[in-house]
Image (tube, rainbow, N blue to C red; front, side, top):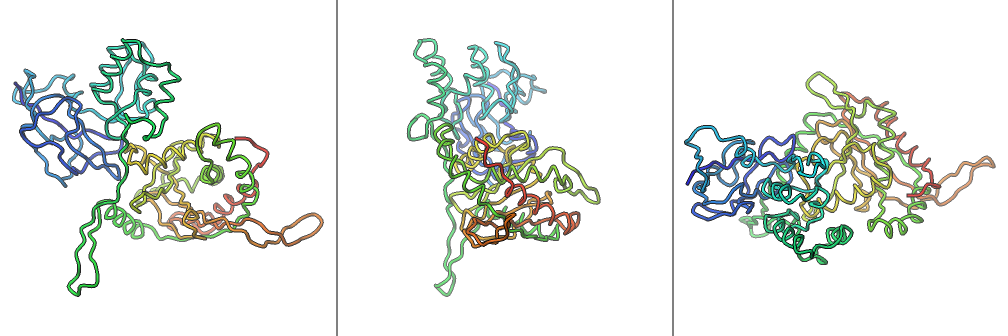
Length: 444
């Protein structure tokens, strides 16, 4: 028997600490390898942390609500291993198991290459990866294995059942596996997504018996702190432009059915807005910057954050990394994927970091315009209002006339420390120009 420390895993490249939300096991409980032991919050993502090995939970070193740095011990587990924490340094192989991260790397036995975060769409524990390696399961094949863990995570039992079926010749073709993996939760009962539920709020009536006091949940406190901090750091200025979206609106109306039938996904206005933003950023690269003390950092990557409303009323901002590398179809699929997983609480911590510019579609709520608050340390954010039919002056070679057009307001908030009114105003005007000049002959 040996007493081994379980440490706080690193859950994303830029995540250096996590908040312990809930211990799912208590001292004295027996735990199996890959079984969920506790829930941890990093930034705005809540995730379960599995046990790196089997044994008995001997001692909890960090309480619920504590903020613990990555690689710091959070519990001690009594295992069958011969190596104890009292025996000195742990072997490198055991360190790897204890410090498992959501984006691990693995050299597959069949030589398909490193299993890094760019290839994996979900978290795999070292145990699952080792079994896959031993059974010569490719990365592509592993991605298609239905998972029953938190957020569709593949557990030890999932991979063993798959291996058993594989050896018994009962596993379907890759196409059949793909069909299973893309079914909705109701269609595939083996997949149990964690839906973002409205928080249980502590409600206390005031002394007068009429008002009600509601305790903020963790995410609301975080949002409140960041909004106040953003306003404190940056002097906000907002410029407005009204754009004619008739061409965009009519094009989407024609193309959305074919896109839905082909891709099984909706075609919204958001990817069109993001495409226009990306083009405008290339014209005005000083919008794609951040400020650190008295230095301006010009970002080479264009990473677009998009505000998503959650079922509980809170907002979350997943990030499309390298948005300029996608065509319109790719942006549409990426937008839908991130939005859906955001509402199901299935985003990875790294998908919430690294944004260089943010958009907010306030038109979804029927709002005409808004004055969005910056996501620090970014210096620009744009809100897109609802599209409304209006009488407008239409200029033609034969003269001007009045017609019914589909119009929308764009609201651009920016950090006036480094973005002057001329740059902020020209940028939002350029985005509007790209939308008005949209090529309605293209197919998606």
